Length: 267
Length: 323
Image 1 (cartoon, each protein chain N blue to C red):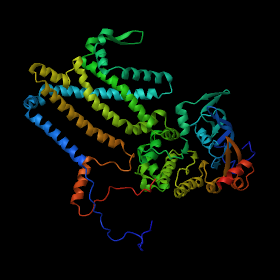
Image 2: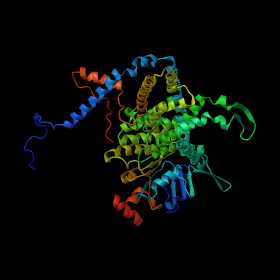
Image 3: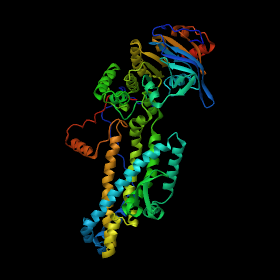
Image 4: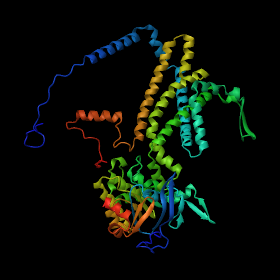
């Protein structure tokens, strides 16, 4: 966190950080959504991002797996530039095949689940390993079964998404992302579309995942989760990182007026 | 309002059923009577008018020439629809392409083929030899490898397939495009986030879901094509209509033979309607919580309910919590 002079607590584990952003800018037409983001996520770190809607949290996540192209700045995932190759000081756009290969290593979970409605839970999870990784079908089905089991959904393997509750759908979505054996997981408000009583079961799966050492970036409004599971907390507003640090510090002793104003509304 | 004074909550024992005098509906009885009279008149004329010549209809219904014509009609419908669907998918993908030249040329194609009557298009293809007496295959502006006489290459049947298929492509393109646009963009993002390429996303994620929107109008188009194929009679293709025309040109039994054609069109249309039902059902996977029962299943369940002393269990429902 060069901008705020904050260094992550669990740094130095793997050398190269999993995600490194420097001066990231993103515009939609004239609207500047990201206005110079600096961010560092170490390996096995769980970073939670909070902030008011429209602050650019989701856009930042989507830039990390290149669903959005950045307009300025630099963004590295696992030491490699996102979307480009730099040669002799010049940037070359990556080919579709190369972008796909990089996306396959980053899992993403969406607010609206976005499960494939024409496939069963098992087919949803096994689809990408078979089609993208070329994994033999029997092995992929086996893996999908294990992942669904881990998410507590063994008996729902043959159910279609519409036959599942929101919480179950989101757990399938997490299993689907994990099936690609990603090195980084992005969560875009994974519990915001859920009924309150279903939030816990999804957070439980995410907690397990964090314990197993997965590197995670979680955009969330669940302050309790951020406090207990997060290694770092980032507060974003109006396209910039306002404040970042230990979740406990940021939540109980915010340094900036904007952070204080936001927290007073949500806590 | 005075609250009910029952002391125990919950259902009281056997409330008295309401018995009221129903509202009279004289209009319904009158309309029913009118319809019945009209039906009786129709049946009466069908039976008593000798000019219907039911004997002739029976004689020709399965005659060799009529069945040959029917075969050509079905062939035309199948091949023209297949051409139309393949072309429609290509044109729809082109139309939605990021390449402006591709999307523009798809627009122009649709504009032209939807904007001119299909009968005129059939005539143009039939008379292609007027424009190009020789048709050859080779490098554009370069050497030719194969060369053929247009009149021998573009037979009436080939002209009919070209005309009907290319015209259908324009309509199918719009149907497929509507289907593709009906799929939520989140589906594309989810597929991309998993590392799926654009082609794979289209094939495995978008098109299967678009099918639900594409199938019903495509069934419509197929039924429409079955009948539109009769236009090929104008360019001398002996499909069903032209086959019966050739017969009544000799024996002057015009109406009976046209009825023969109509009955066959109705039969094939009915078969297509049933087929459409099952294809729709196939692509409804995951769209509804349970698949709708096939007519056969409904029939069997009906029997089961009648013979069963206890109420038949409802179809298996997953104990999923509501969404």
